[in-house]
Image 1: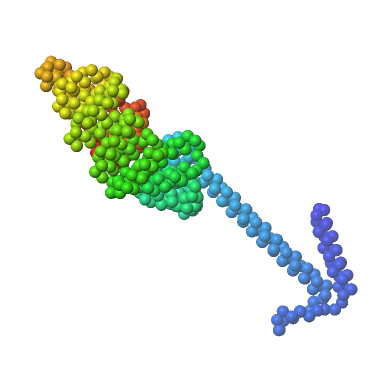
Image 2: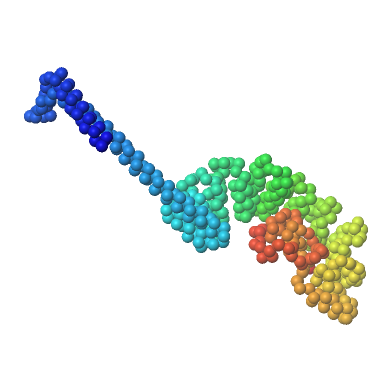
Length: 463
């Protein structure tokens, strides 16, 4: 009732004011809307009309702004609900993957990407899942799509490099890692990954260059020591590769560089010996190898000397070297065994029997020992003892032919190389007799993939 009375009062007041000002302002104004149309309006009517038109325009402007604001709010709310739904799919997908529900996780991530094809984290996760499943082509496609959305995201590029490496597209993986290093030259993760790929491809010179860069980084001391050891190995490998390609002078420089970094690095010493042998300087090679043995007491050096002297037709020289070594280490069963084995090779039956029959510590480890002893008994016409030795040889579950053993992973080999083909470590091969020979270290997979690698020298096979 009050609102109605107020409205009536305002209308009456308006009519009164209009009449009052119209009487105060007599006269009319002629307004033309076209050449043939015109109106006669009083001044007060014109003012009231102008005010009404202004009010209408203001109302329209405010109304349009409020409408736009309402539409914007509606769209924002709709996008927010959409984003929340996408986030929920992504979150549920990560939980499903963590719970080993891989197929469910794939479905959830695909739902998230169906709603937002450019969601980077969903593309990353789904690509990683496909890579884990061995579907490298799909993983590469997803990570490439993520890279197109954010081409400076290092995580995407690193995952893409893993995809390409898994697909054995090593050169493409190197290009992706190089892209990271163009953006951030000191990215350690990319440098290490690139170095490891170069090692896989046996591009030792490039790997060596990166290794020098890594050692200039501010690494913790334990990591620095490990990287320094790798630097020695890479330096040696560059020399080995140069020697294989017919560049002995350059190879010698790298071998010496490896020795300078590690005075106990046996492969580099043997590499220098190989260069001297190729140059026809066999006597000089022998002298160097003898000095190396005096420093390292490595039986591998004796094996190399054995091959050299036998090739030269000088068996007495290698016998003398073994005997000299035994004078310094009279209770070394390995030296006794290998000298006896040398006598056996040279058909020195009595000397071989006298030496091997006194050896202790290898009888329960090497099938070779019992095979040699059986043959020696046969030559001495001691048939019963020969049969006993052959039976002992048959008890061995694993055929061991005096292998070399990697002290890092226990990989056994019938030939010596500077680098273990299983674990990739350098300077770790030692010659048997070796405690617990033929046994595999716990946790090592005997079927693990071999490191692509070829030794520098001929196999030191002594059987």
